[in-house]
Image (spheres, rainbow, N blue to C red):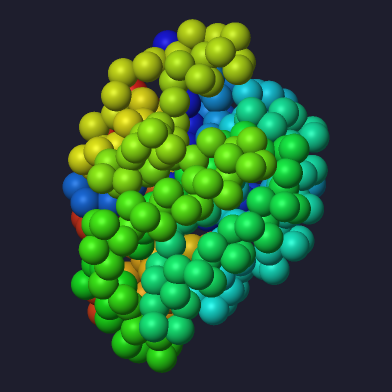
Length: 323
């Protein structure tokens, strides 16, 4: 069975690596280094081996001009579009009004069912209380009305690296919320969403689920099968707890997204991500390196930043592994 390609939970491929992605489609394969084992798997991107592509981004502008090239591989495209209007915590993300314009373009080029608005994560700080997010959610919902049916929310998780990056790069202080507060905030967003015909669901935050807030399956094999009229693997992926996603192959890499979002779980720090982008070569067969058949990597040559390091490389030829 062909694979669902996720591009990508680990980084913003549409915003920063669109040219690389199109080149990988043209060549029909990509090498993906698993983030913790260091194993490299060769993933086929040939037309017959790709059932659908699921994109994740905060800026689709660089990808939009390449859609015709992507459609040569498949027209079965699904888009997660994050628009939070929280540039205080997302310094390199485009203004939400331009993001909305791109959202509307995608919704009209395809269908509104092929694009999901993500208003996540909600990252409550001493300078950005929930009421700020509530007002911005309303503003975005008004601009998107009639073109969005589903919105996914979650709350930022205070990982150690997130706390460290907040101390290093901002004067914001994370505010610790109770489960009761979070459930109330989710309910208030759901009330606004309902007025615009938008269904709210929660990603990996099961404690938020209620009559108003459903459980999200960000990659939903059953939905994709219906949308694209093709059989897909609907087995649950072995990802993090509470994740309801079905099987896919993620082709991204951590520490490569240069949006600089302070709450990001996928970057050790923004300096390492910015360096990865600076060193990136669109001709590489993997996002962070070029992996020849003998497995000796022509990887980035600058010394590593303190934090996550690239694990040793081991080559395996298996395009059936999941995320």
